[in-house]
Length: 260
Image 1: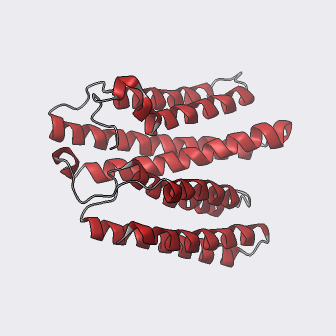
Image 2: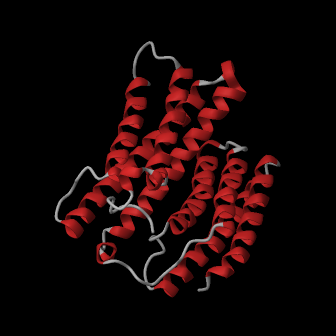
């Protein structure tokens, strides 16, 4: 699979997701599901063909992880829509996916069949894939926080708080699983489960930030608006963990997790 073909799959998928988002606003439930699912199938077909072409899961470079994130965003959107019938969530997930797709189109990464020995572990693929899904769900919770903080403001219902909390619960659960997979991968690749590598340190910071949010929401006199700001801050930390770490001086030439 040649990377230059990505644009054709991406445009087709985004158009299908856009139709699904439009159908959601028009209360055309069947069309929403059909269009969104077909778009996901089209996008995943490129991932699958690229997987076959590279002879390993496309997870090595930052561009490849953005590929999975672009796929999981609409998937998280349709899950939220299916559960709570939020019409706007598919529009937001489509726009966010389009942003990451455009980054991949205008700043393509080098996609090589060569994998360093550490990346040949069977734990590597599930670790990254689970993490990307967690990032997508937590991204949806951030969208909810922004929506409730700046649009709904003082008209937030208990159900909307519950939706936001549930997204964080799911996202943190998958993040925890991803960290466990990562520990098993690290043990096999480098001989230890955790080494406080810069990437691992920021992963721990991100994990604890979402855990703090969950505990804060259980307090009897907590302030919901402060909780939303905590979610936004947590997502900023998540971005630092995902790609911002690559630009830190402490990670240059020392971190085994930086993408090349």
